Length: 478
Ligand SMILES: Cc1ncc(C[n+]2csc(CCOP(=O)(O)OP(=O)(O)O)c2C)c(N)n1
Ligand SMILES: [Mg+2]
Image (cartoon, rainbow, N blue to C red; front, side, top):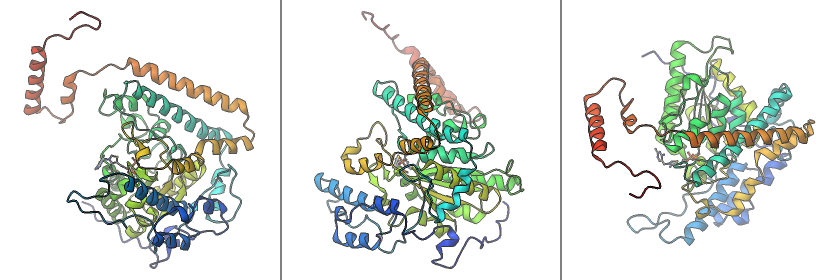
C-alpha cells in the first residue's frame, strides 16, 4: 500500500465558502432558470410553499425536487397501500422536498433553451471560449451522435416490444449530457458506465450491437473495454462501479500515469451514475477514497430526477451537487440538456483532474423521458405535466436551432436523419442474426482457472440436456 497524498487543502475553503468548491451563487439576471421553477401553488404542503417562495432564485434542481415531491404525494394518496409500512403504520409524510436550509446553486448553461449562446457574463460565460474554439465538424458531430443514439434507442425499444430483447433500458432525453461529456474524454481515459449510457458507448467506439446482445441475453459483457477506448462494462448493481472507477483511478495514480504535464498521455477516469445511486453507500465510499487519494477522476452524475419510481426529492434534501463538497471534492451543476455545457464543463474537469488537481464532481440536470426500463410504467408515479415540461427542454431540437443559426441547412439534417435510419436498420438486421450461445457458456469465466465444482456442474447439465426428448421442429406435428 502506498502512503496517501498530503492533505489537499487547496480545494477546501472556509465553511460556507462555496466558491472554492466551484459552486457559485445564483445569477438573478438569468431568466431561463427562473422560468424553470415550478409554480409554488402546485407544490402542495404549506411549509414547502413557504420554502419555495424563499428560493425564488433556486435552480431547476430545486424545482424538480419540489415538483417531484408534490407529484409523488399526489400519486401516493390515490394508491391504496402506498405510503404504508409493512407493520401497518404510515410512513412520516415529510421525507421529500427541498430543505429550507439548502443553498441555491448556479447551473452552468452555455446554450439557452432557445438554442442561443448565453451572452451574460455570469460563470457560464467562462466556458464560451471552449465552445468558440470548436470547429463545425465537431459541433455537427454532437448533433449526429444525439440523433443516431435516439434513433437506435427507438429501434431497440421496438425490438423489445416485438419479443426480440428481454428488456430495454432507454436513454431518451439524456443525449445532451452523454454526448457532450463523452466527446470531452480523451482516448487514454477510462470510462465507467452504469446501464443507460448508450450514447457514450457509441462515442467511445462500442458497436451498439453489444448493448443489444446484453439485453437479448446472448452475452454477459458485450464488448472488450481494451478494444473500445477503455469503455468498461455496463454495471447493473447501482453505484458499485463508482468504487471500481475509484480503484482504477488509484491504480493510475500508483502507476504515475497522470500529472506528468502531458495532457495527450496523462490518464483520467470518468464514472457515470444516477441520482438514485447516490443513496448507495458505495458512492459515499468512492467519494471518500477519491478525496483521500486525490484520484484523477470525474464523478459524472446524471440527475434524471427519478430512481425508478422514487423522485430525487426523496433521495436528497439538498441539491446533489452540494454533496461532494462534504467530502472535499469540488462540485459543479450543469444544464444536462445543453450538450455544449456538458462538453465544456467535462473537458475542463477532466483536464484539471488529469493534471493532478484532484477529483471533480459534475451534476447534470436532465430527465428520463421514457420509462425506467421496458418493464416500467412511469404513468403510475409521475404526471404528464412534469413529463411535458421536460419534453419542451429536449436537447436535440434545442441544439438543432443552434446549428441552424450557424448556417446548417435542411440538407445537413436530412443527411443525419438518413444516417440514423440506416444505423437502426443495420442494428435490426444484425439483432435478428444474433445466435444464441450454447448453454454451457454460463460456466465459462466464473473463475479464471478450472474449478472442480464448476466442471461437475457443467457435466451435470450436459447429461441432463442429453436426457431430454429432442425439441419438435417448428411447424411439425409432434
Ligand atoms: C444495489 C442495487 N439496488 C437496487 C437495484 C434496483 N435498481 C435498479 S435501477 C434502480 C434505480 C437507479 O436510479 P438512478 O441511480 O437514478 O439511475 P437511473 O435508472 O435513473 O438512470 C434501482 C433501485 C439495483 N440494480 N442495485
Ligand atoms: Mg435517476
